[in-house]
Image (tube, rainbow, N blue to C red):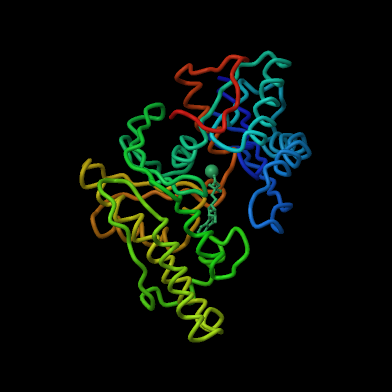
Length: 335
Ligand code: KG4
Ligand code: ZN
């Protein structure tokens, strides 16, 4: 039998990525990172769109080559439809639509946040349904209840900043370049997570809040720097470890609560912040303590990547959930 081969494109933010998936197995997941944004302290949307324009053909070409797959073998073209930067999304979506039209192949539109969750279905051992997923990225913080690959419900989310923003904004206060999350992770490894205490929000239910942490870190640093101008340099590792510890605590308290409330014992994490080594370790420990199964995608499937778009599209293909050529990219999206 021939099987189902999908070519997927991801271009929602500042990574241009393409992936080939055959019968649910990822054959390639090529990611081109954009470096033009570093000096601006954040992603510049216009520059991101232009870089996607330059990258998209070679990225797709590379993904097909790495998968040893020709366009003729592809059964469907998938793309990230929403949410994200509209200019970035438009590059990937228009390209995918053009390909589908030119090749006369079906089109599959994928929700970026659902794809982050379903990245957990790429590698073994896969979670069994229903499972819970803590999705933590630069723009989102959600707890998702996945009943099936096509039935996902958000049961908790942030009311202000995302977890990635909490990392990046506190990193900026500490004087680290953007994006600060990975650097906080790196310095935290050498530090004492219990050295400094930061306020944890009291938010009801399964929702999150991170804006108070940022303020708490700001006031703390102002006070300490007044007393000792070299405070940050001298205590960098302990500050990073303590901030990271607080963020992880806020996140896992709610995930634990969701697991207890729903009785679900398969816990996953997803999104860029799930690359955080402290969070990965803490989730594993939580699972061991309560006897829950925990799942963490490998790094390449945590940050933005087309592999997660491809696996989501594979399940949409099986469910017959195709898009027509009138579909448009959207910065914001209903779930
Ligand atoms: O999912 P993602 O790649 O992009 C979207 O926002 O969709 O997530 C990016 C976020 C950034 O805030 C970045 O600082 C954070 O993920 N991040 C990390 C780590 N790696 C990436 N945060 C903490 N520790 C890390 N190792
Ligand atoms: Zn993302």
